Image 1 (tube, rainbow, N blue to C red):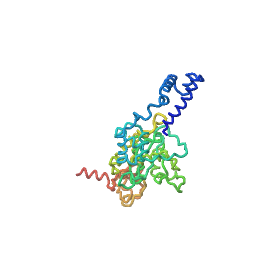
Image 2 (cartoon, rainbow, N blue to C red; image 1 turned 90 degrees about the vertical axis):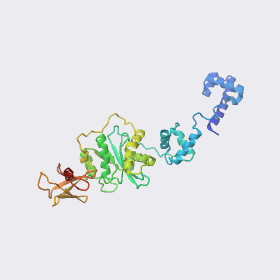
Image 3 (tube, one colour; image 1 turned 120 degrees about the vertical axis):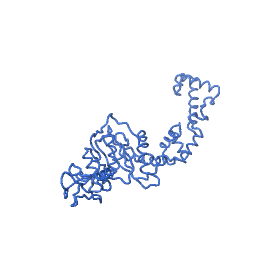
Image 4 (spheres, helix red, strand yellow; image 1 turned 135 degrees about the horizontal axis):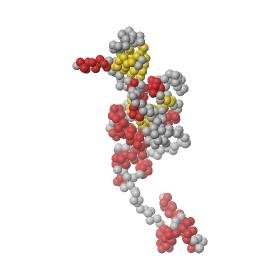
Length: 395
């Protein structure tokens, strides 16, 4: 028996009992109406209908009639066809967003979810586990960033790639996201450069203990702060605290974001016909991230920002690989299987046996520094940039 019909039967039995006691003067009109949870006027009206028509007069006239808010059959069929042919595998929430945005669907999310369950198109989610109290967010944007990567088959027909995401703890807003062949020092510097260049320096950044973030002498043990990696050296130079996570649960906020991205982003790439990493990065920057942040980001608990502007700081010279080398007898430096020839310098006749520092930039270029002085800059193949410029001028 449907619940509404059952309630109708209970209401009739209760009304009949109270009406008979009212007529026996056990209750006043006000008391009888109060016991039924209705007004006095309604009680009088029900009494008249009961006397004229019997129990049929108390039937709810809405029973058996289609609701004015019911989704028409043709729209129901359209929704089912859309899910089967175009949006198969989407969650109910993700699918409903596209219905509203792209197909002018005017009914609520609850209907969409219930409809998908009733047609066997979507399984009900498992019951959640025991409650856990999550860590409170930082009150201001820029107080803490999370950076992590997820290996996944993001693009159809392409091998697994790493999606590198940098997000804010206070708001869960994604500040940078792109695909990389493999997570590492280069991808970390790229993400940090995008965020620091646009927003400024945060107070801290929270990461796992990957080898590009920290040296960890013992597997699963504490990190060695006395031996900073390239990333650690750059963050220390900029005065950004680097916090190591010691469990997956500690990175719960970023893990939940990746769960959402793995479900939604793959489908969005497929819908948009994205087939290459370069096209995916543009789609992420211009389309997906703004929409994702508008939907999922939180309002910080306090007004303002903890990001610190860094005018005049050349991030390119800091967020890069820096390693010391000794200059050879041929006045060249060996680095990454390249021979970097030091050009003539007014500082000294040559730099043989001198210790210099080689910087390898995100664009693939190189530079050699002796102290704070740049001795030469080179392209990704090791050709001196100044020589190339002179050759262009001569031509």
